[in-house]
Image (cartoon, rainbow, N blue to C red):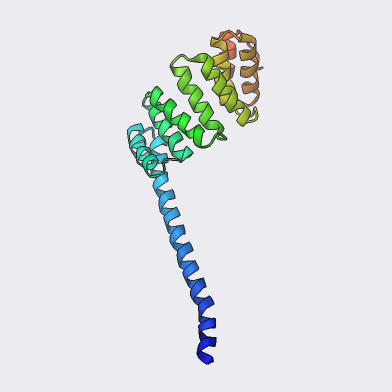
Length: 184
């Protein structure tokens, strides 16, 4: 009888011990992946696009449904002026997670770089929607695409809104393209 009681008391201890070991190993794996990701992000921030591309190619192979890895590989391709490869990566990223406003902004920039202004405008508009009209960069790029598709008044409004959000590049554009001399 005492043996059975000891087993019943030992079982919860064993279960808790195994659970903590499992959680600890998962946490270690997560921290290792996070530290490794910082290497790729560091390469992107330092504009070492070849290194970043190599790193995120490997990550995409390991996690082929990761929107973040595709987006970051797309950033590296964009930095290397591989615009069509970047577009592919951004489209894959959106396919796996269509809620990341930055991906639409990046896709729009790639389209803009290959002179697809109509399509770029659509992507910048999606980015602006995801950013709730509070991202000056998305507004500026949308304004630039609008300018090239002959929506000059709407472009001016985008630039003015971006200036209100503190975007000096939009103020420069307003002054040079539209002749505005005062702060919008």
